[in-house]
Length: 299
Image 1: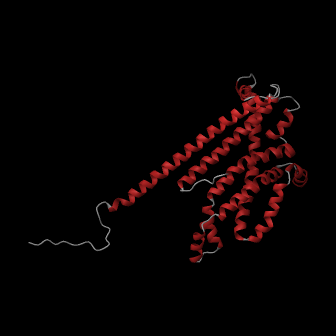
Image 2 (image 1 turned 45 degrees about the vertical axis):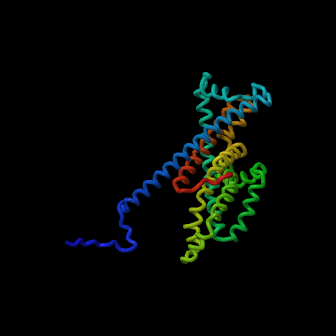
Image 3 (image 1 turned 120 degrees about the vertical axis):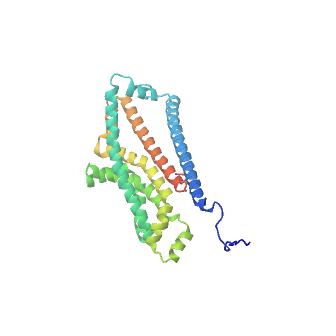
């Protein structure tokens, strides 16, 4: 009686449980991704809460250290009462909320115009050094000249409408975003670019497959720093050119001695700026964690 035994060929990977290994690896990777996303979300929310606490403490501290008259200086409690407990609280919320929404609309115009210009410029720099050498000095000039000095010329050329808002907000957003995105596009590993070149890829292929994916942390950093910059640009445009919104209303509150409304306006737009900044940061941490990347530090 003989027993036929077929030997497995050399190098065979057939062994008990080998068919389940891809599923095990996929499950492990998914579990690690969920853990990274949860940690990033927790870290971002904790940072936001600490930021709010720090701002409130600093607000109280500055008023106490400089001993400013309560007639002019209002603390967080005064602003809270202005929005919630005084008889005209509903009207106050409507007034400040309406001004904040107008300013956010203006900030959106400047944010989009500045970020689009910065992205197109940074991509152009990667395609042509001549474009970089011709555009970067102009961008540095726009950054170095105070907007208050440029405002009359901008208003004369573009008027007092949305075009001026786009120009002023775009100038504030443009240079930091342009530098950050350009740095990110240059941060791709040399080995990856060499690999594309070996397979016959050109400049556009390297830009699409290597530089753009590698620049994602820098792009998120540019978006994050552009949010408060766009709001600042909107406030400047309202104050210098268009009126309306928080920037325009502040000029009316001061001569009317409406100091609580003034502080409430500043607190409202500051709170919205902090919220938007941290929303972008949360999205950045979650997306980069899922992609196995880390946010750019120091921005």
